Amino acid sequence: MPIQTDTQIAIIGGGVCGLWLLNQLSREGYQTLLFEKDALGSGQSLASQGMIHGGIKYTLGGFTTPASESIARMPEVWRQCISGGGPVDLSGVEILSENYHMFSDGALTSKVTAFFGSKSLRGRVNALDQKDYPEVFRNKDFRGNLYELEDLVLNTQSLLQQLSEPYSTAIYRDAPEVNTDSEGNITSITLSTGEILTAEIYIFAAGAGNATLLKNAKVANISMQRRPLHQVAAKGNLPSIYAHAVSIRSASKPRLTLTTHHCLDGDNVWYLGGNLAETGVGKSGEEQIEVAQREVKDLLPWIDIDNLSWTSFHIDRAEPAQENHSRPDFPFVHHSDNTLICWPTKLTLTPMLAEQVSHAISITPNLLAPPKYNLPLATVGISPWDGLF
Ligand SMILES: Cc1cc2nc3c(=O)[nH]c(=O)nc-3n(C[C@H](O)[C@H](O)[C@H](O)COP(=O)(O)OP(=O)(O)OC[C@H]3O[C@@H](n4cnc5c(N)ncnc54)[C@H](O)[C@@H]3O)c2cc1C
Image (cartoon, rainbow, N blue to C red):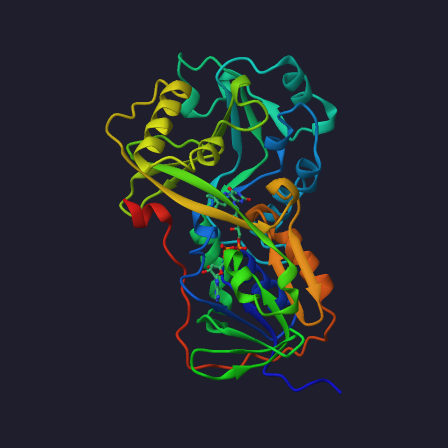
């Protein structure tokens, strides 16, 4: 006999992972609720650069890697969702750029150049002729190579808005406590109202919050790693750019990763990550901004950056622990009994994670609306630059 529970699925954490799962599982007919302790997306999701990428940046060594191949089909999956035909409907999401660029300050190594033109990349990267350059690179001082990638860049705020809207009354602002029996099995969650909620399945999609939430559960041996970043943003009269800067100097990693976003007051914001953010973790804000300014002057000397406002902030990527603290190549889903622990590891890989979660769930959808609680509903947060400038 099935155990009497309050809901079929309870999700904890309202970033892209929790919200995507809420959508997909509700559409599959499961009675699903989500609890978010703060604003939706206020962890990593709104701080992300919004790039839905196909892994080309992992091929700068001149060969494909597990990371570059696992992710290769993702832009296409997202495009299907954006056209209304995928496992979730993203048809209203704002696309900031339909493609992404990769530019070098000088000639890339002949090995990488040959590899980019090779059949193994199946047209995932195309060298551009000068006549096809985007506006920002149409300058006599740009003398490097420019490639177009099939990647797209999304407005993450609009993505979270679109994911939350259809199920807004099932998304509560609360940080429930997790209850376990003496063996560490999860038995229920306690809401801040004091009510105890039971579910057939508990999904932990709380990013960096997963570790604390699961400290008393028997799955506590799943360990998490944080990879810290020191991101920089510049605001003002700036042209749009969506590009990785690579050079022989930066070897196998983009030296700088640039995306352009819109501030609430209409100004453009350049959001700077990549190697700059990874290597700047120990620097003060002032030092990091100085490095960023030098990088922009060096890589894009024709851009006037004298009258911009600059800011920086620290944020961690939260992921399953890896040997040598390296970057995980795949989304992570751990399933045991009534518990699923999830880290997409990249925004891009969320659909792959959701596929795995959907396969792991073996209960029968009951098609019922989830129960109501006397708790505030959670809403989408603001982008970091809107809070900082
Ligand atoms: C600076 C930066 C740039 C990035 N850029 C890209 C990119 O361009 N492309 C890409 O593919 N990936 C990118 N990523 C990675 C991507 O952002 C993350 O993999 C993804 O957003 C993780 O989503 P999530 O929902 O698992 O976590 P989060 O977005 O962190 O969401 C977790 C949520 O859980 C909530 N929570 C925590 N504890 C509790 C609790 N006890 N109770 C209830 N709720 C709780 C938090 O408040 C948060 O809202 C980037 C990451 C960073 C940090």
